Length: 625
Image (cartoon, rainbow, N blue to C red; front, side, top):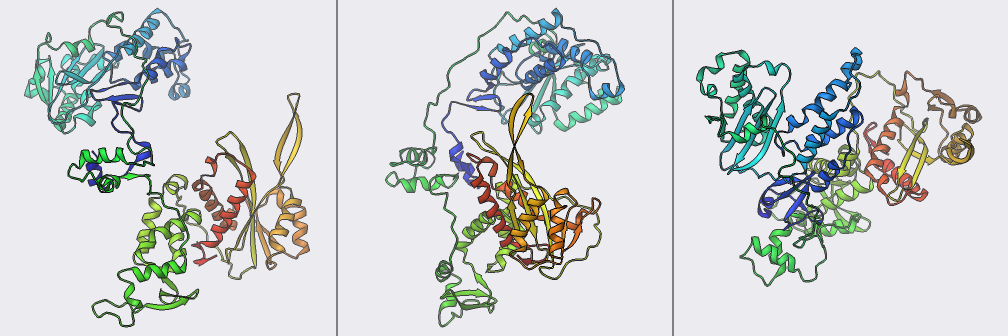
């Protein structure tokens, strides 16, 4: 198994993998060497359910039972009274829209009997075999006036059961059509197992063997065309010999027979978990496992033994390298070691080597280093992965275009664009946390601002809620400002106020953000006007926080106000794009998965996010911040 993973160039997360196990729990099932069966804990929970009191509870019970629909025979027959009750009393969107009257909820002895039968059926210890694709599949089918039934068998062991209740229309079909429908529905239900395999279908209806069967009706003709896709070999079998499929559709059921108790044993691991313990002093487990799949390896050298095996495991000891920034001295040192770049540092360039005329030697930070076009440092192959990791992580996971153009301002290597794109696409945090871009229609033409510090855009972002693993909850909200020409960005957190209020006769303390116009004007004056050139005009939305005191502040500094309208939110588009970037940064930084939520963590995040936005390439203006 490990050799096949290695040949497919796949990695295994050692910390989440277990080997040499007798059984494995997977999606509500227990996978053993002999077959598959339901988890006892799940069945115990279903058996503990009391009789439903309304349609909603009955639907929940049926949903849990149907999850294990392939494990028990005659399932649809046992559930028929319960599903009929849902149809009589339950409402759907269509019935509510048409205002169809339904019968009131009624639970009688017939429903209770069906409820008990299905619970007794699930209490039986059932185990299904695994399919063997090297031998044919045997499918036994049958049909009655109420339901369809089938079982898939290999080596006299069942692989799956199938049963389905007939609709009112299907009950009017002829016997030949019902028998053929049983075959068709079974093949469609287990298409993932039977498609492209050798199939032998056994039926007790001899008419299905006739070549002219497809001429009886258009419906049967369509079914025969579907059968041609599977190419089954249909064999006639007498009804007395087709006992299993016949039982699925006809025989009565006695829940008191063959009733077994659930196996409530305690699970334990019989073998060691391979490579879950990352620190092993002697390497005994690694040696024994590696020897099993590579017996020609020498037993004297554990490192040689494990070399063929450890490369398929991820997250093992030594695989997680610390991310650190690369210095100019380290780049120069690796350039002199690189097979292709070290020739440029020699006095006489070898004739057999191809010379890149755009490469030259330049002194940066008192170190001679190879540069491209006299501006970009040439990065050797050994440092590229570490540089991509560091910039992508500490610039708060920028996209492929921003990351590539940020790196190109000071670095160069061949095929940088492809490597950056591959790195960003393989980043799990980016794929899970970032929102997909929405394609808009044609936007109106907008006159761009070209003079730096002439305009400033202001807005609020948030509130955001952070949940710590210890149950702590923290909200924060920020004031954002940006110069649309230079893209210089500032962000400051809004303070909070504690307000006492009475609710339901109890005095409680509420924490609210101070986003009054006085506080907004105070923060804007301290964070922007007192530090940067005074703008000619300011763009903001038409909210109440930008009224009164904020208007007086703008009039004092003779700043023209340009509030946006509800129908033209694109007027503040640059800052709105930055808000989207901040949202992506928050998703990829795992801020909501910390051990605890405190003010220090929020302050650190705001500082890092502001630095990341100011340090990366801005696509809208094609210039770095």
